[in-house]
Image 1 (cartoon, rainbow, N blue to C red):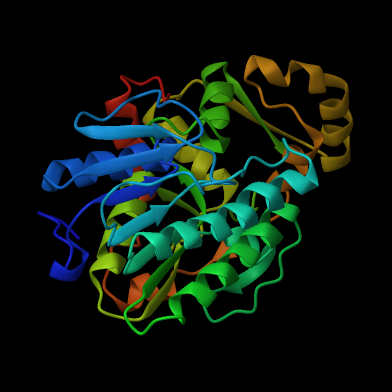
Image 2: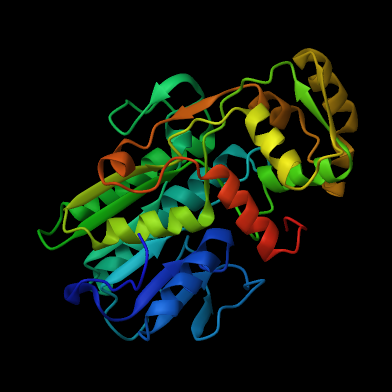
Length: 330
């Protein structure tokens, strides 16, 4: 999708983005502000690191929105708010924020005559997978994060079927990378910038991914659809291996970085010893090492069927990120 974006007439009006101060939320609001002069409101528990001009930022905890009144109908809202970092939280925190937050946002939607919700779930609802899985596959989450996201999906399914006028878009993004990410790809770039990367036991781990710009465009494309419900996997069609991702990074920006491979068990042992250094940005944590050894082999069936750009997108996405941050991949 390209060019100017406009919601259908029934959805025109104030747009609220829960989690708008975060990584994906900031990119979404930048895109909406580019094309729309309608009121845009971000609701987040944290202040934005990079505020978007013309956006009203409100500080609220999605676990309790009972006192939040926008003062106008909100025909369209986006829910990007989540506790998502794994590892990083106690099990109960995922359910408290993600499920309770979904319940509170659905209540907010009822009070504000919302017609359509776009919710970002996660491919974590599928669990790790070596074989390809698409939107027709049965979810089998293995983490508390994945289970909480699947439960949140059900909350919004209940909401959408309450009223014939309601509509729902559910996005299941893979690893999202780009400017402001601060996650897996950022840690990888930092290691390569230090001159090395160590493969934990294998190089062929499939890591489904998507650039944040592509994810935002796919979300907006789905919102424009007249379907009652849309469910899509936010992932490129080429299931890139960790080796392909590393080599593309090296080719674009880190040609002198060297790569090594150590047995997975050795890597986990070393990570346990070096875990206190994770605060330095290396991200050394035994669970992160294990995640690098488990594939997420996700197919974007819906995106392919609707003609969205799903192939040969890794390099352009990394190059965009590099150019937007002057090579810092921040």
